[in-house]
Amino acid sequence: MKCSAPPAVRGRPREFDPDVALAAALRVFWTRGYEGASMAELTEAMGITKPSLYACFGNKEALFRKALDLYERDKLAYVGAALEAPTARGVAERLLRGALATHCGTSDPHGCLGVISTVACTNEVESIRAHVAARRASSEAALVERFKRASAEGDLPEGIDPAAMASCVTTVLQGLSVKAQDCACRSELEGAVDSFLSIWPSR
Image 1 (cartoon, rainbow, N blue to C red):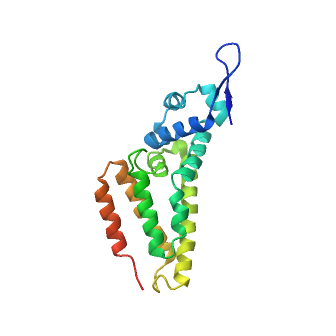
Image 2 (image 1 turned 60 degrees about the vertical axis):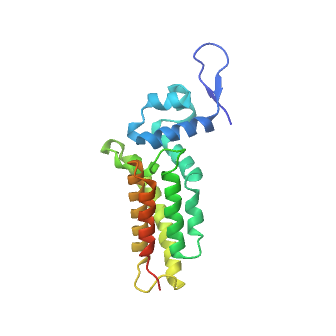
Image 3 (image 1 turned 120 degrees about the vertical axis):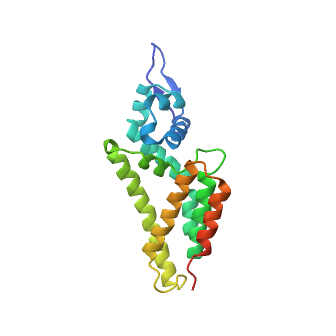
């Protein structure tokens, strides 16, 4: 798929690859957050003009939502695999280790795009905060359902609330993201994951 950029001069429009441009926008948002990413930074990274951005992606908010789609598809693929783990503890471990690999890697910005973008959001971009929160709630709901299944199968001890466990895991995930963004040592965060898993409730 190609998008035609409005020509700056007479003649044929310059074409660009929207997938490449979107990947570049994702890195800017991931590094700077939604509010911190200026249109000048976005267009420079994407190699396009503002009119081209608006024509192909819509406004900044629409671009961010498309970047979130790409982020979830390419960077959070481990979430789906985690939910397929045979045990609840295995689900939690895959989620936590997947988050470490994604948010503390060497090729991508550190931290979670969703957390980075909502922590700094002001009331002026409440729609972004609400949109990211809705995505997060959807993911947590899927985790609650998985833990309910684990409870029904006897994989979680009686008295353990699946919703509370899901909330606990997602809270740890968000904490890892914040510390990763602050460039916490990878070994320190791995130690935190190990400690959390060591106190996982067993039958």
